[in-house]
Image 1 (cartoon, rainbow, N blue to C red):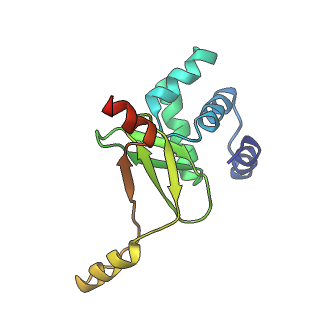
Image 2 (cartoon, one colour):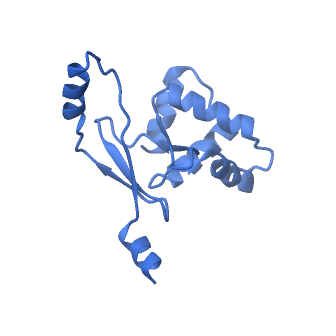
Length: 144
């Protein structure tokens, strides 16, 4: 998702485009190929606008999440990580725990889980599948 698409959606929602919101959006666009923590996002914003604070970052992340513009997940350590929505179609990600690189894949095994849930008299309403591993480059670095 690019800045123009983000601007349009934010404007249509009635939110104002503040200078700090613009800075946060730009940092998210610049980090589009990785997941980013709120703390890392704050550091990137402070480099350009020292008055940015964590409350502003979290408030904006929540607003973007409510507008369905942001994907939120947690890493293996429980840290919340964020990424702009990269597609309107259903998909999942695999993340390198070495460098943070993210790959998108369209396969979803939910049909098998759906059958299991139905057998247990559950009705699934949502799911999140997050895969973590090491990219080829990080595998080589770990072997050295």
